[in-house]
Length: 80
Image (cartoon, rainbow, N blue to C red; front, side):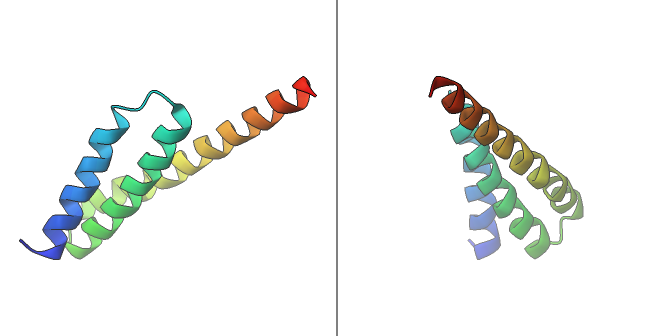
């Protein structure tokens, strides 16, 4: 098994892990990790559709992650 194969399996396992998450924060963190792994995998294996998809999904997941952070900050601010 090559490093590229291992990278693909690791990325796939992270996607599977996102389906087991109940917290949106952890889901987005793991999704960002899977996007990074799939970007590496897609570029190493020359699978352009996978590479393109995760290049698009990475900023989406990062933006949603930042939104969760902003929302949590606003909730904490209202509590104080």
